[in-house]
Structure formats: C-alpha cells, structure tokens
Length: 281
Image 1 (tube, rainbow, N blue to C red):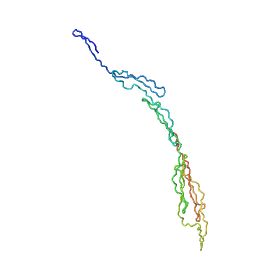
Image 2 (cartoon, rainbow, N blue to C red; image 1 turned 135 degrees about the vertical axis):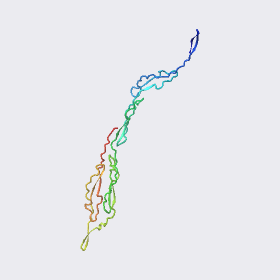
Image 3 (cartoon, helix red, strand yellow; image 1 turned 180 degrees about the vertical axis):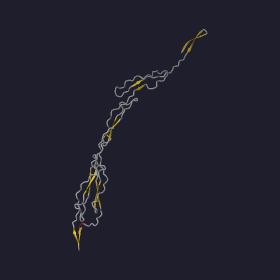
C-alpha cells in the first residue's frame, strides 16, 4: 500500500511517499450451537432423531483449520424386544425334557448409547413329562432248591426274577426262561436192590420166612398255601411246599419225582414314583 505524508522541516513543507505491507492472519473455524432436534425419520417402527451444528462461529479463513469433531448428533435410542419366536421341539420324547423359544432385542435395537433390553432372550419350559417305558431285566439266579432225591438220580431247580428292574410303563418283559433244572445226587443209594428182589424178611424160631411185599412208591400231598410276597410292589416272589406223604414211599418204593418247593412271581406292578410336575423357569 502506498500513501503520501506531509513533513515539515525548518518551516518548509515537504511531501513523501510511505509504503506499508499487510500480512493476512489465519482464522480457525469454530462450531455454532447445536440446532434443535429434527423430527423422527419415521412415524412408526424404528427411526432416528438427529441434530446438527455448523462450522461458522467463525468460519475458517486465511488457511485456518476447519472445526474438529462431528457436526451431526443422534439421540440415543433404548432397545426393545421383538415378539417371541415359535416353541422348538421337545428335547426328549419321554421323561423330562425341555423346549425353548427365543426373542431378539431388535425392535428397535439399542442405538447411540441407548439401554439394552431387560430380561432374558430365551424362555424354557419342561415337556413330555410322562415316564419312559422301562424294559425288564433279570435278577441274579436264586440258590438251587433241594434235590428231589437224597440218593440216586434226582433233580433240583433254581429261579431268577424279572425285577432288576421290573418292566413298567409298557416296557417289555425279560426274554428267556426264569427256571433252570439240573440233575443232582447221582450216587447210588446204599444197599439198594432191584425191585423184583425186594422181600420182607420175617424170622421165627427155627426158621426164616421171606414174604413178598408190595412195593409202594411215594406220591405228593397237596400243595400248601402260597406264602406272603417278599415285596409289596416292584416284583417279588412267593413260595409254597408239598410233602411226599400221600403215601410216603415204603418197602423200597421210589420217592416222589419233582420239586417239593415252588416259587412264583408276585406284585410285579411298578412302585409309585414321584410326580415330575410342570415347572416354568
């Protein structure tokens, strides 16, 4: 810039040219106050509310820096649950199972620092609480019963019970036989003679008579009444006996064939069980 200046020296006035140089100053930009919140972007459902501010307080000039920071602000939005989904299939076909359903925090989701949904995203309930069928399993074999003969050829039996566990809730019964039989007392009876040679010896003074006597084989008497069952439920056993006394074997007759004890199953219904009950959790 050039301009003229007056200079007085010893009563004389002189004019002179004065030159000046102007250097521009950098002005950094500054944000204005936030504007009012704009209307929601939608009238229903999931929307957003925003507000802005401008970098004009002051405007950046002469190479000054622009405003630092965002010029847009979004209002925080709390999350809200969606509707529950459909129930899934039960985890078990019988017994105590579970089924679940879910929901998501998406109606709307939490935004811009909003609070997440409160509560659980998963709901579970018990299902199919009817008991499962239980197939029967054999117990260990019971001890062998007495031999049908004290000597000679006899038989003895033993039992096992279908109670380990007993079948319940339409489960199948045990497969196989519940009785085993084996030969016992194979040794020959002492002093035994053939049936056709059996005689009754009667001694008189000066003589001995051999009288033929009818050989009488033994026959079973009637069975006694059944004993009480060993358990009230769940599968037990009871027994009854008979005696070889109708008639008893005489004069070398055979003893009764078969067992003098009989064992039977009883009270095979399952014992009452605890109710599972329904419970939501």
